[in-house]
Length: 99
Image 1 (cartoon, rainbow, N blue to C red):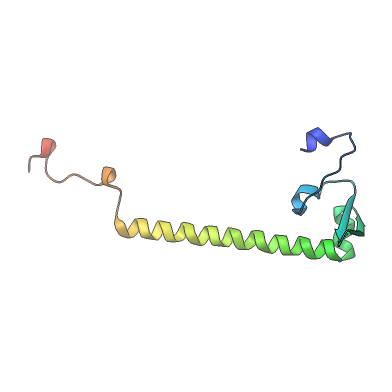
Image 2 (image 1 turned 180 degrees about the horizontal axis):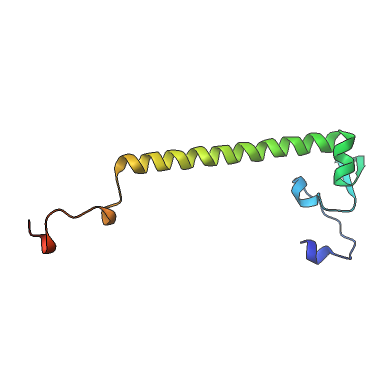
């Protein structure tokens, strides 16, 4: 999206800060009114609504990553307890099924 908007005036409406953080100017609306205005850095330094939303979204992303790691660990543990998949298990006996 950055390439498309380069050297153009664009109006982007977004709920995710990651979508707008590279914009030259960000307007923060609350109840239909502009409550903050500035760059990403300026708005974070101001510590207002934008900064609150940013921190909340970072925490949400961290929780999602933690949940994904936990699920991955559970899958690995379950797979190790079950043993290797059927196609990966060693054969019993000699060549051609002979003992």
